Structure formats: structure tokens, C-alpha cells
Length: 420
Image: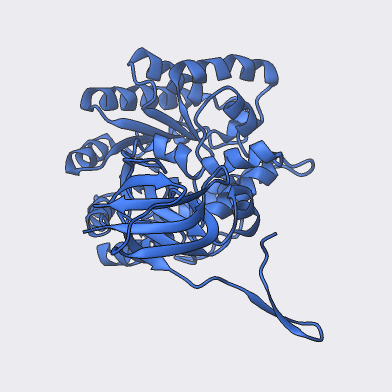
């Protein structure tokens, strides 16, 4: 029986609550739960949240930093070239070993949902097979959703059959990368083809779209149009969308209306977008992040992704989604109190909507999946990126750590924490 009582915690709105989980589901939330004889946690007045969700990641490449060598230019294109070289020497065991390690890092940081793109543009589908195995292996600990991703271009790499086969094998989402096709028209045609496949199979769509500084890279316009034409509203995500930061304001005013009409999910990847984009600029340098505040204000569902951890594109990272949101609020100038809370939602409730996760949240009837952080509220979580004291999955504690305090010696030793 996955029964648990969590006492003395603070919710998103700073209300002190107890939570009763019965049979892996939240059965009751109140100021005081009168129940005994089952396992308990005293949260010590700390903040409790639904788990973090990463709506954009590349698990097949993760933790491969330095193989076959380091990306010296830091550009997207050199990263893609390095990945192309590495693919020839990949083994299923190596992919699984790295992905398994990454999953454990994720659990320790309270990330219990990951949408991972998996490359289908090679000579085989070994990576697909490996990550399907990892998805099954880790299903009791976190939700993994896989995207069939034609990294080298659907038509450029002639991998349409591979993509269809990956979907038949059990991959969940149709992916694409229209801006990497040889021509703009090929890119637009790939969007149309892939959305039609998703509509026919009843699947979700997630496109790497306009990951460029080129303001004329406008494939998201086609993606929104195909979404509306095929009745896929709410089932399609546009990832990256970095060209939007270079578009003129008049065109953006037209584009944002199309995105809203299509109910498109927006997935920026702040850590990677801010480091990869603007590489051709001298000064001033563009920031490289899509127009997050404007998209949120328009009512679009914006969810942040980590994208990479120690791979050909990014040398850093520990799969901490608070680090992602922390970067986003700086780059997007979202330091207002309400803005920062929206950034927290962009790594919790918003990506859960992207992935269409059932029973996610901190309400009665939701899954007993929760994270207790050593802080008092979501803004403190973003400021401190604090220890995850408890990570709970379906009422079971799957990760824990002791609270962190620092011994300060200024004439008299005292214990200090960083919470106001």
C-alpha cells in the first residue's frame, strides 16, 4: 500500500497544509489531517510542489560530452556534426548506461517527467530501441515520453520510413526539424507531412522549429496553420522558436494571433538557446530566447526544457529544472514577483500540459507525486535552487537528503541557512 501523510508543508500560495496519500493518490489536503498508524513525513514548514517536468530533452546524446571531441565553436552546426560522427560508434549499452544515469540525476532533483527526442535519421533505430527499454525500466520512477526526431532533416536524410517505423515500435510523439531541411519549401513540406502522420495516428507533435537567428525562418507559421487545418489544436508544440527574437514587431503581431488560434504549446530551452544563438553576432549580441513574456501574456502555454546535459551541444548541466527557470527569468527580464511564479509554472504545471500527463498536480485525486524543497515558496526555489528534501512517487519516497546548513565561524560558531 502506497499510503503516506505529509505534515507541515507550504503550498504554492503559502498556505500551511497536510497531505494524505492513499494507494498512490492524493486523498485529502487540509490544514490538519487526523490520521495515524501510517508512514509520515514532517516537511518542517518547507515548500511542497508537484514534480518538475522537462518537456524537451535529448536522452540519446546525454552525458556524451567530449565524444568524439569537444564542440569548440559552441555552435548548433558543429554540435550536429559531432553527433553525426558519434552516431557511427554508438552502442545500445552505452546509450542505456548514460540514460539510466541521467534518470537518476533527474529523480534526485525532483524531475519525474521527461519528453526526450530520439534521433531516427541514422542507418538504424538502435537508439529508439535503447530508450524504449529505458522507458520501461524506469516507469515506476518517472514518466518518459519519446519523440521520433529526424535530426538530420526528414527529407534531407531520407528518413521518413525510419520515423514511421519508430512510431510503430511505440514512440509517442511525431517530431521534425524543418529549418534544417535543404530549402524553405522542403521545410514547409516536412511540417505538412509530419502533421498529417500525427493526425492519422492520433499522436502528439513536437517540432524543433526555427532554431535560428534568421528572422525569415518562419516555419512556426506553417506549423500553426497545419495544426488548425488538421484539427490538432492543443496537441502540437513548437520547440526553440529562437528566430522569433529577431523578427520585426509587425510580423510578430500577425504570428502571435496564429499561434493562439492553433493553441500551440511553446517550448523554449533557455540554457541552450542563450549559449548557441547569436554566435554570428559581434555586438550587440542577440539573446537567442523566443519571446516568452509576450507568449505568456497572449495566453499560450509556455514550458521550459533543459534540452541538453553534457553532450555535443552543451558542456554543463545536472538536469535541474530550477536552473533552467532561473536562466529564463534573467534572459527574458521576468523578475517581477508574478513573472517569477510563471517561470516556476513553466517547469511544473505547464510542461505537464504539453505532455498531456494524467492526474498531475497538487489536488485531491491527483497522483501522489510530490517534491519537498528546502525553501518556503516558488520564488525562493528559483533563487536558491535548494536541496530536494524528499521526492515522492505514487506515495513512495524515492529520493531524500538531509537539510543543508552551513557552519559559520565569526568568533562564535553558528548554523546558518539561506532562507529568509
